[in-house]
Image 1 (cartoon, one colour):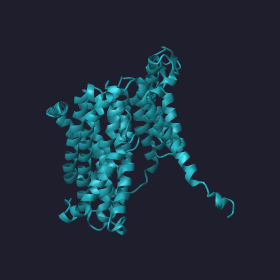
Image 2 (cartoon, helix red, strand yellow):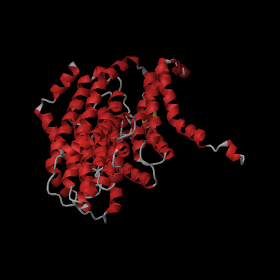
Image 3 (cartoon, rainbow, N blue to C red):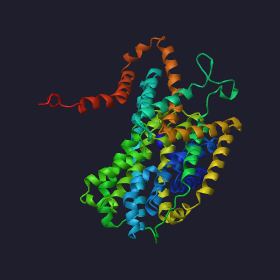
Image 4 (cartoon, rainbow, N blue to C red):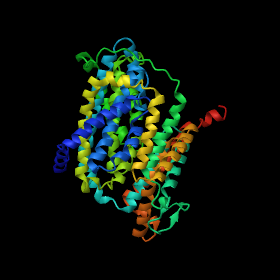
Length: 499
């Protein structure tokens, strides 16, 4: 309780409050612009938070995460183009409602559902914190190693590629993490004579490249897209009849979103799809879905915003990103010298609760910004891409250079921009690569510490209950789906014999 109060007191700083207001506005702007999303926005702004104190820096990044996730609904409803992938299912019912003159009602329901979903997930996060802090006493290097290995095993289900391609992408990220001086042996690896690589490949330039510059190259092939906006008079708050119809859907989707967000490497997009499907399955009028059902908007938006809070659970408590955007935020915490993991709530509890309270405040802020500013942000979506993306490119270059005032970082960002573009073009998601880069260094460090601790008897790891538990989960994550498929998709022996 003391830590929660100390975290709340951090928000009494006028400077931090002002930052959160501007970050919320910026997050809504980023989420409303088709092509940009929360991950890209956080990656682009990450370098500009380096000079801040840890609490304001990470609070700004999480604010952009929450606000951009909500703002995707604005364009989804008004121009049938989701600002973020997490709002793709909102298009299914939001745009039909807008076409029949109910855009204001649809946006009002999106704002209410998003706010409730976000607040519920943050409350769950706060309640779970004391339990997570107690787990810290049972973690040593072998447990951290097994936990990180489990996080890497989840990369198969991350991103838009096939499981095999996702694993390959993640393995490439782990390989990149080995660049630099080995801390245990002091041997240079893969530096190729570049002194700048002796400390490894920096997180920030890579994040800017694979999420910012590669997106620019992808969007360059979509310059001919014409968007048509539905006319909207004003936003309307849901009526009593609307609340009566959707309150169960909002609560259900909030729970689903929080749970999906907690799962390592999942995120708001998966949560919104499941939330929407469950809303349709439990609806008394499922035939209305896809034609302008307000339950569809509530189910999708409550789930995707609840996932933002849930995604911060494994990010802070386990050091494993709960979503692609959380991976960039995790990189930001590591740049600031913070130690995400089971000890977060014992050694840096004030920081953790300050982030929780800031996320709570942001969910309230974007409710009002969404209600009164949606019309304005919808107009911004018509900024010509020929102007928008050169500006994004300039931000990318400045951000890459600003970290260490190094042109080498700029070339890394540009290089990984092209690498990311080619990966996406051939069906390889860049998200597993980014997560692999973050977790790869942690994996190697924890393994080295474990070998020292166990006197190089690596097989002793399985004698430790928590380590064995995470290793079993890793095996199930990697081989479980394949075994399950073979067990339940084999033809009946009687049928195969012709009987």
